[in-house]
Amino acid sequence: MGTFIQWFQRKGAYFDAESVGIIGFPPSEGGRGAVALRDIPDGHTLFSIPRALTISTRTCSLPTKFGLEAWRKAQLHQGWVGLILCLMWETAAGSSSKWAGYLDILPNRFDTPMFWTEYDLLELKGTSVVEKLGKLDAQADYNEKLIPAVKSRPDLFLPEHLSIHYTLERYHIMGSRILSRSFIVEKWNEDEDGNEAANTSLGSAMDVEPSCNEETPSVPMETEDNSDDNDDDDDDDDEEASDVAMVPMADILNARYQTENAKLFHEKDELKMVTTKPIKTGEQIWNTYGDLPNAELLRRYGHVDFLSLPSGGHGNPGDVVEIKADLIISAVSSTPEAVKDDEAKERIDWWLEEGGEDVFILDYEYDLPPVMISFVKLLLLTQADWEKAREKSKPPKSRLEGILYDILISTLEKRLAEYPTTIETDKALLTNDTPLNNKNAIIVRLGEKEILHGILQKLKVLKEAEGRSSAGVSTKRKGGASGPTKVKRIRR
Image (tube, rainbow, N blue to C red; front, top):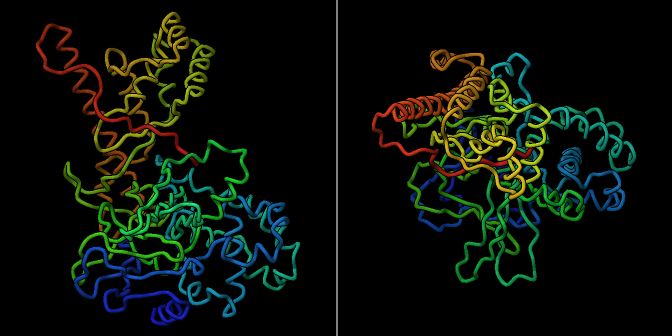
């Protein structure tokens, strides 16, 4: 790492070598990371990076050499294809690349499921990880966008380099580097008086925050992901793609659930990694990946969090389970109260048009999302009540009662049955001798099953309490589900 640090400083970056040490950790703990060499106070700058030293389609000269109009025509301005090609091109340049000292330390091997064998992937059955890998989509972009562009400019992409630097395997490696290490670094807005807060992409959950300079007020930007709202706006798509950047040194920091003690801030000309709380000598310096569930940590970064849970046991407090609307529809259709298929389709189409979700998120709060209950009730409404709801553009209230218990219990049991093993089996498989990929997969599916089991138990208790109440037994339970809505549309 000494050579990299020397390169970093020669390029005009600042590194506090007296405060920060870079050491190796086991793969299960994130690999290489940073530790405090002395007690570091809150608000201390650990290192800073000139914006020009980040790698993006803005800072790399390839798009200009290729021709910006030709770059767009080849669709290299959309998604990550352009940045992947820039990384390939700079790597092929070897020591003549501006970023050679950084590219030399980037990993060429990943423990993410993108590179697992089919046998290992079977361990993730029941989770949403495999279907979100996007391997086929990536391969299509490689064949339909990147390769034609490369072959069209032999002056830029030497033919003898094609089988070395521009292979599908290298494409996946570069894509994984971006997925696991990139930041969103928005273009500086000269029209603003203050500093802008940068958003995060779905690809990278590492945050870049407003300037930490208290003398200059920051101007917060919208943090909600509205990427689907302007699908036809090419300019917005271009801007979002060019915001994705590789940030030398900043990507060395590891992350763990709610452990962050440093954060990347941006200013007009540079980015700064600044402590957000005091750090003791020997403690690891943590960034944040956004407190993601283990399924996403594994998919993006190749590791999982296995911490003490407030409810007992170990896992990731940020874990969630996805329930697809199709599973609920299947459970409803087996009841006598179910409407005909064509009528159900009409209601589902209306639900989606009104902004309803097709995937519901459950977590360790063990509360059903009210909108999930509302969706079930929509499928059970009488024709008259359905017509009223449609006329008023108002979905049913989320009161949990009657047959809803049976439908929701059936739904969660169907979801639990999608995993090939039981909770007890998974716990028994978690030994020190278990291979890392298998162990991580077990931890992912175990956390999801614990959530499903906890909600199932709660539903059964509530159903039994309602039965006693109906029979005239006194109960203090109030009807309905509690807790905040945990529903969002899953973007893949």
